[in-house]
Image 1 (spheres, rainbow, N blue to C red):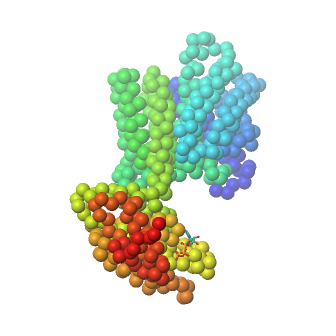
Image 2: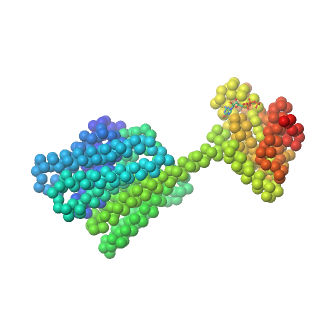
Image 3: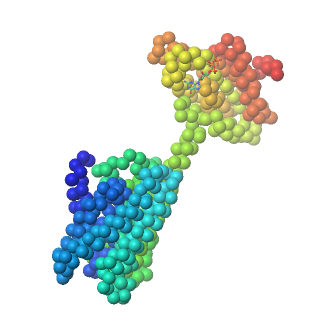
Length: 475
Ligand SMILES: Nc1nc2c(ncn2[C@@H]2O[C@H](COP(=O)(O)OP(=O)(O)OP(=O)(O)O)[C@@H](O)[C@H]2O)c(=O)[nH]1
């Protein structure tokens, strides 16, 4: 979204005040709300934009003090309001600005593997900074409070700010990232799981979570039972389901909705006596969800690595290492059931000349095409691997050497007949074929096939030779 600088700052002030009003609106008692969403916006703004927002956030804090005066109609004079507004603005911006600044570097460098590290730092920073905010706020703004009222209020302030930061910062960052695009930010979180995991729609999952939460709050209120209220901690389970099956953005959104609904229900039902349970639950569920986010991130990274380790990216044949693993398995199985197995080695003839004449990218396309052609001549159970460079290997289960020779010949003829975009480009390949007997290791068979392949090259190329008909190389 393209907005000029002034509009961006005005939007920030407006959003901050709207969130502040929302928090007041959802208070279950005067000055007591389950959470404080503006803290999350301040944190997100400092994380994403840095100290450039200090003036903007300062104005928002000052305005909220005056608005608070109008809402609660307290007895403060203009100068008292200016003083307390300024104190609030200074500590709010100083504490959250410095904390976000300390976390900024970690956010910029986040990737799948250090996500848990970022989550840990985020949780510690959010809890420590909100603790200092509550403490300094209580002392500097409400210094005249009795010890009893102090004790009563500081914990609610602390946990309320903490949940505002923990639950909402990621969501606000993803919203604000559109206004303040930061390259590389949160790219590690742009993974997704296969659609097979998503049997329920996102909306249905949200509906389930909200219904369960509503039932718990109503029941706890009906029976005036903090024990029933404790069931909200179990909502971590459906929330995990969302984490494991939806994108990080959707997780952040569902956490925000869950917290919003909790605060709204507590306000509507006036269950202030159980407020701490709900406050703690919001934080615990959010922290568990963030930690759990690491799991699908790692699963998705693992899948990518697995793919890289097993599949050659150019030809889509198996990599040499994975081919060897599959070949060993095949040999064991053939031994157990007394089955024949054969091995083909295929090497492109004079491939260097193709590279030299047409360039490496044409060479790459040729290798891709050769792999496709070989694959299409094979059965489902045959195993194609790229040995390296312009050399391929094929394991043919339940195939005698003579039959393997026929397969090799079919492939050889097919490859020799290929035509390419470049009219004068043609390829041919040489083949070494061997049948494995029961006592043979893969290495022995490979040596034999390689010997036949070399002999095929010496015989003029575009030739298939069987190991049983190839004289052994002199050492
Ligand atoms: N384009 C491309 N070239 C590759 C790749 N891997 C290896 N090569 C090239 O493939 C060529 C293989 O050449 P050699 O096997 O030594 O010999 P050749 O020219 O094929 O000749 P003969 O095997 O004796 O018929 C080398 O020039 C490598 O640089 C690749 O992934 N892409």
